[in-house]
Structure formats: structure tokens, C-alpha cells
Length: 128
Picture (cartoon, helix red, strand yellow):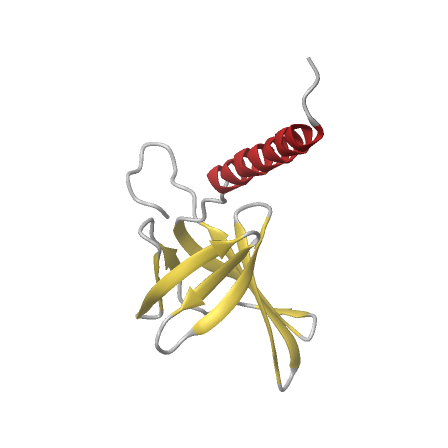
């Protein structure tokens, strides 16, 4: 059965639209889960490693975060976590191994703060 030219184009573009719709839905369903408690494991200033003395970062399942007593909201966009509060606005890259890496410049050069998610040990109910 042959469709008229106008109907053939409509069927083609309808199929393309439907496939984009389904692909978009699949991509949202595969969003990265970053919920958990993170501790700063390493700091690098101008390429030199330094011990990290920063407070833990808590990313809650309701889209809120807590860092050094400051609270706000976070949003995961692709491979990035964006923190947003009245006092703090920052963006960090999500990396393999449950790591979140903040990169910024100061007087000494490029600084990196590497946070790693704490994993619960078997038999314990608390993270740590």
C-alpha cells in the first residue's frame, strides 16, 4: 500500500518525533544518583597535594545539601552537581568512583577539592 506524498512525510516525521520522545524519557530515567555523605579526601593547590580540612558534604535525597552548616539546594545536570544557596553557589564535576571534584582558581592558582562518598560497612547502620 502506497501512501500519498504528504502522508508519507507525516509518517516519517511522526516516527522521528516519537523516537526522540522515547530517547528523552530514557535519558532522564538514567540520571546519576549522588545522594549520600561525602568527605574531602584530597586537596590540590597549584598541582601540589595538601591534606584536606574541609567539612563533610551531605547530598540529601530531597535535593538539598549541607556543607559547613550551610544549607541549600543541589541539581544534577549531566556530569555536574550544582550547589545553590543564599551564600554559596558552586559547581562540581561528578567523576568515577563516587567522586565529586570542585575546581576553582585563587591567588595560588588552580585548586581542586576531591570529595568521595562514604560507603556503609556491612553490619553497620550508619555511614562512616
